[in-house]
Image 1: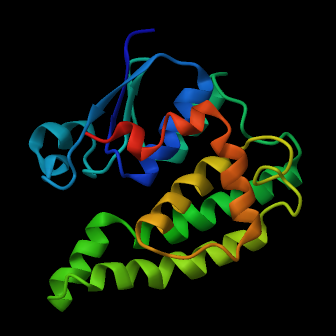
Image 2 (image 1 turned 90 degrees about the vertical axis):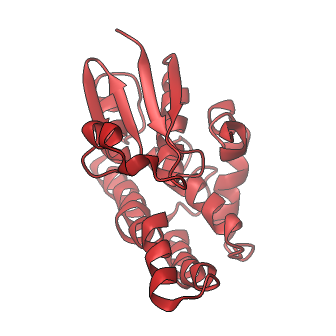
Amino acid sequence: MGAVILHDYWRSTASYRVRIGLNLSGIDWHSRPVDLVAGAQRSDAYRALNPQGLVPVLEIDGLRLTQSMAILDYLEDTGRLSLRPADPAQAARMRMAVQAITADLHPVCNLSVADHVVALTGRDSARAAWMARFIRPGLAAVEALLDATGPYAMGELVTQADLAVVPQLYNADRWGVPVDDLPRLRRVAKACASLSAFRDARPDAMAP
């Protein structure tokens, strides 16, 4: 296997998910930062890696993989991770929580969407208001989907749901969205914070 390279941005929650997964896998990987604020994702060179102009992109096994959950599934299917419950009902519950974040909450809180809101309104303050409008109800719904006792999102073992929850909690904190009254999410955050794979993937550990 050649060098494993992750094209990512330190604050990207999608990149954050993949960084956690790579750390859990034990793969020796290297970050190649993409400055989203400077617009590096719109360059011809980056579009050649990912026509969508999004992060992350993982170069592995001679492939260039995009979309965080597709990347995590590939690591799972190639035996590098084991984060999907074997029980079909538990796996479905996990996917419900994951997709509530990755398919419903994350897309409307993407940097490009928030920037467009600012452009439409002419108010920079609209960005934080937009984020709060979607992050709080989105996470409140996720709270109800999590295991009642834990310690992790789906119970006793780390699953893909934890890799979706933790980065979104970072985003909530970044935008000042309160989660103190969501005990399941706070429990997951505490449990995952004890694991080096999660700590080493944090944005503050990757900041330029």
